[in-house]
Image (cartoon, rainbow, N blue to C red):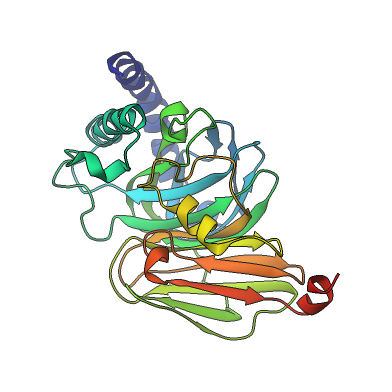
Length: 310
């Protein structure tokens, strides 16, 4: 573990020099050059993110693609003022990994081992800026998110087939969001999802074909929406158990359903968007942190009955 953190620190310092030059170049551009008229591409591989180092603030439309063989997610975590990427890597992922190794050794649930020892600044309000929900290998989704200026981490905390967090395998990197602002606007949604600590409500009709979802977090924090494609015989409880990161086998491949996107963690009052192209069949919307409390919805996209009767 100490060897890993030392290597991470060295690589961060090297990366910082490149970022400084890139930020200077961005600040010298005109506002017209920074206008984000296209779609930003972020690719998840086994185990890295292919993504820009620097972005303007404001709305961004992102095509998030998983080209790997394992499921991946994308989380944008804005760090509090004065906290560096190096601080986050060492003070957050260091203790998390140590407790996780104990969890595997003693075959306990993650949180049964007591306090993880995370710093006080972790989980401060308005750190969670959204991201891409879990994607099984070979799948892609389109997100629209608003990014405030600041230092961000991009991370994936799904586990490998060997039981290691993807972030510890290389899916943890820095993103700088500058004061220069994108001119993009949020899209018009077909379906609105509102999340609270105990509910997931939907306005609008989900249909076969293209659907654009708006997600609004009205209460609490750390809520999200993942979207899974279910077989006829898939047990919902299996999906709920798998998506619970505090369980020993949570987020540990193989996944019990095909995950095709969604929107990752938001702060209270936050809004984001994602798209899905749906076939007629059975699906499940669920919120990772509160699915066990019933914050989920099973959806049958017509003509599902034709598939169910075969």
